[in-house]
Length: 121
Image (tube, rainbow, N blue to C red; front, side, top):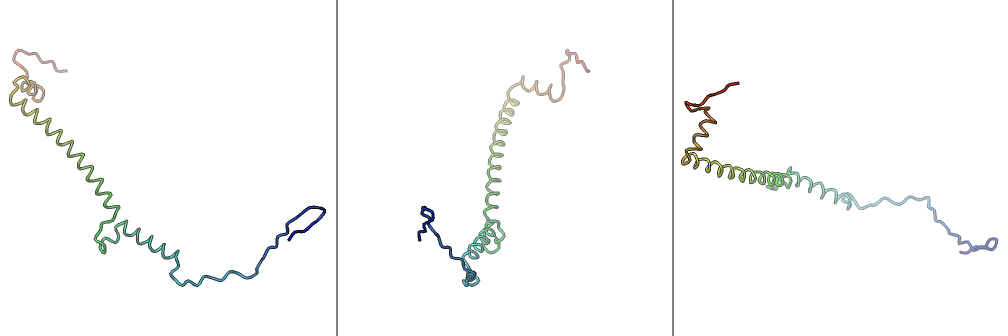
């Protein structure tokens, strides 16, 4: 509807106000919101590992922790293999190199030659 007042065109808008409230949904107990909330709750229980006795799975969080532990053990294994290789080299030197043997005896046991003077501070 168009109203004219003082030479201007004004669009009059009718607003419909109802004193009645919207009826409550009668969808029953299982509404879509509750359904998604239930699915999310079960998913969280499965992820956390609480359902381990029923599903047989330790849960994704536990699997992630185990994966990290496995990676740490692999890194430790690599370090130990390097240390073993160094110790094998030292073993070979101790079996064959007389100068290295003498150096280690002096360093570890504190031995000196008979013609050396020891200064103790």
